[in-house]
Image 1 (cartoon, one colour):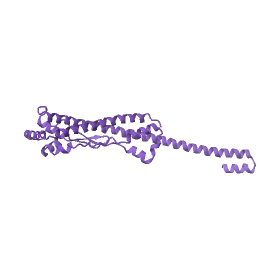
Image 2 (cartoon, one colour):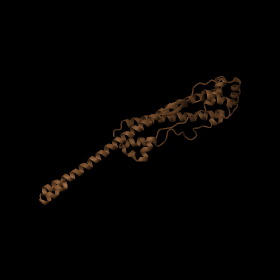
Image 3 (cartoon, helix red, strand yellow):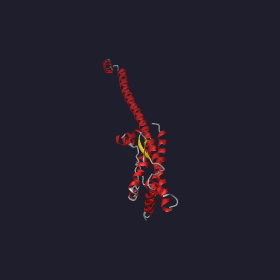
Image 4 (cartoon, helix red, strand yellow):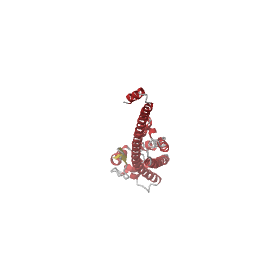
Length: 256
């Protein structure tokens, strides 16, 4: 249509009309490109919003995991404290609870974090859809280390040590009667550990085992190391939760 109009005006030597036709063509191309750019930018902003919302969902799941892990490890710490008291003073804790606490103090549970959205952002290059450089720095800073990975030495030698001292019949009874309880956590599963445990086993078995444990000269050293490592794990969880709260706040304030 425009080409015909230009050809006609050239034949008629109507140069004003020719220029007007060319202006219309150029303006039309410009508007087309501009609209395309606007649409692309809008699509990018929409996708950035979706991705940041997904990161928020991952972080909220992480907080659920941290809460369950903290509860579990807090129970283990109570057993550790009971073990130290019982080892140091036979009158503070009866032998049954001493032996049970010594075993339960060796309990561990796995930790995990939700990093799928962040991994997708980095691997696909979509991270640059987030235009706020300050927010990008905060996200990169948080995910630069995985809070769920325990530091070297976190799985203390105490677990292997104590399970080599307590008779199988007691260990088996504890696992059956007072072991981990399965629960739903953050769209998957986790465990809780009961705070109390009583077993229907002969008293003399606990007395013999308790005496055997107290006769180990290196047991107190291993318990103290275990509780030191355990406190570090609990502190790491608390620190990670604080960082998640700050990042959630920053993302909530983000406007693409």
